[in-house]
Length: 115
Ligand SMILES: [Zn+2]
Ligand SMILES: [Zn+2]
Image (cartoon, rainbow, N blue to C red; front, top):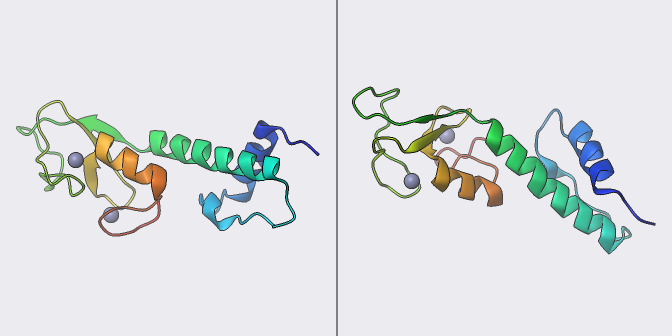
């Protein structure tokens, strides 16, 4: 039996509207490798779609948008024109730092709030 990747993605999207967390979906041992491969692909795809939906802005230290002045992933300050990503929990990080983090773990690096 073969699966269309977009079919799997669509099913996952519908299944995860409430939680936005496809990690809750465990594949059965009886399912084929092709299905598991699709599932992993859909999971990665779904996550990157969620990451792109998060708000971001270009940093200007002269006009601070929050009281956070540095990124807790790399511990560097937010510098002029760097892209800052704001998560649902209001924590802010460099987008290049947090995007990488979120691809492997869909939670805030600081407070562990789900994506
Ligand atoms: Zn950073
Ligand atoms: Zn947080």
